[in-house]
Amino acid sequence: MGIVTLGIFAFKPNALIGSIIQMISHGLVSAALFFCIGMLCDRFHTRDINHYGGLLKIMPGFSIMFIIFSFSSIGLPFTSGFVGEILVLIDSFSVRPIITAFACLGMVLGAAYMLNLVSKVFYGKLSTQLGLDSRLDISDYALHLSLKPFEKAVLLILTVSIITLGVYTKPIMTPIRRTVLHYYTNHTNIKPIQIDNKIRLEHAR
Image (cartoon, rainbow, N blue to C red; front, side, top):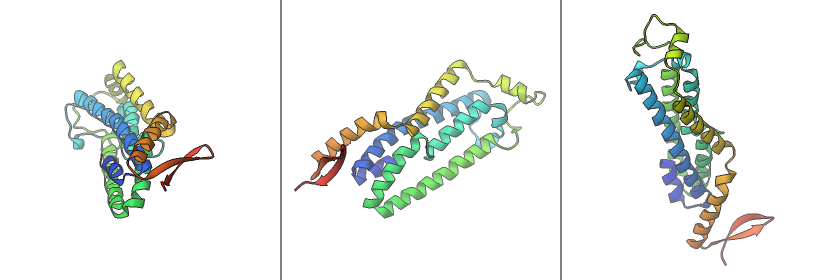
C-alpha cells in the first residue's frame, strides 16, 4: 500500500490511475494469499515457515497458484501487481526521484522476502515437520491433500482475475482514466485537449 500512497501524493494523472489499479490488485492478491495461508494452516496446523518444504511435490496445482499470487505481489510483468506499480513509479519519479528510489528499494526487499518464502515452502526436500505419515508415498500425499471443489473455484477465479488484469487492463483503465482526468483538471490549472483522438494535458492559459 506504500505504492498507493506514493502515487496519491505525487498527484500526477498516471500516478493516480496506478494507485487505483494497485488498490484493486492489492485486494485480489491479499485475498488470494490469505486464503492460501488459511488452506495450509487447515491442513498442517502451523504457520511457521521453517516447518514447510517441498510442497510443490505433493500439492502442485496449489503451489503454482500460490507462486503466481506471490509474483503478482512483487509486481512481476503480466500480473495485476505490475500495472499499477509501473504507472506510479514513472510519474512519481518525475516529481520526487529520491523518495521514489526509496520506494523501489522497499519493493526489492519485499521481492526478496517473497522469493525466500516461495523457496522455503514449495521447493527442496519434503519437510518432516508437517506431520505427514512417512509410510505414504508422494502420490498418496497428493490424494490426501487434494483441493476441495470450492477451494479450486476460489483459487481459479482469483488467478484468472490477477492475470487478466495484468494482461488486458483496458476494461477498467478507461473508466478510471476518465474519472481521474476529470478530478485532476478540476483541482489544477491543467486542462485536457484532444489530439489525434487521444487525450493530452496542457497548462491552462
